[in-house]
Length: 275
Image 1 (tube, rainbow, N blue to C red):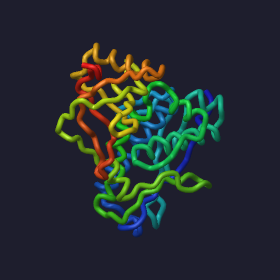
Image 2 (image 1 turned 90 degrees about the vertical axis):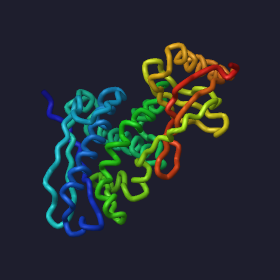
Image 3 (image 1 turned 120 degrees about the vertical axis):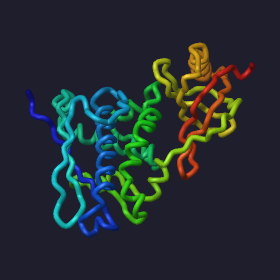
Image 4 (image 1 turned 60 degrees about the vertical axis):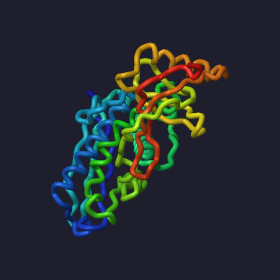
């Protein structure tokens, strides 16, 4: 069996108690658990054709290790041992570039930061008809909120993922904490008009162009949505792609971040715009 390919990087905590090489034990454990889950979800998606794993416990095709903290700082060295055949076939450096590209894209989207995929592999995930990024965003929200735990106690603190010999990959701070502090508006809104831009009948996730907002919004179907209503989503996407409108109406609840940014619609009913 070929040796696993190793991807190494650091998780560094700055300011507050971290400057003295220490963190509150509970805060640190919650933060590292959040990072462990987020890294597992991201690595699993990388190695398994974009499959989104909701529970970031184990990775299929890799193992994630933590090394001892360095004396005089609070900095953890993380090593991902990729055992999947993809690493053997394309090499460590390419796997590492794809990993960091996927991490930066999916985490940036969740944290409301600007970043677009750069590698062909990750670009293909972005171009799929299945709304991969919307499902990943929802899966990463809770783990990344946990990763911010020390920042909740000290707003000046920052947590940085650093790639060896390259520099910062992603930075967590008080502003990104607001992006993963999520709330669902309890009020049901009716008659949201638009058309579906991405959807797969096997997934509860999709993308919807909201005519009033004049932009595309992620959506997730709730259990109340019937099979017939799901067919309307497919109908809407097909007709919109062919330039024939495909307008439908949704009954939804809004999921927003603490910044007030709309993250997604929770869809409870779908009907024709003409009904």
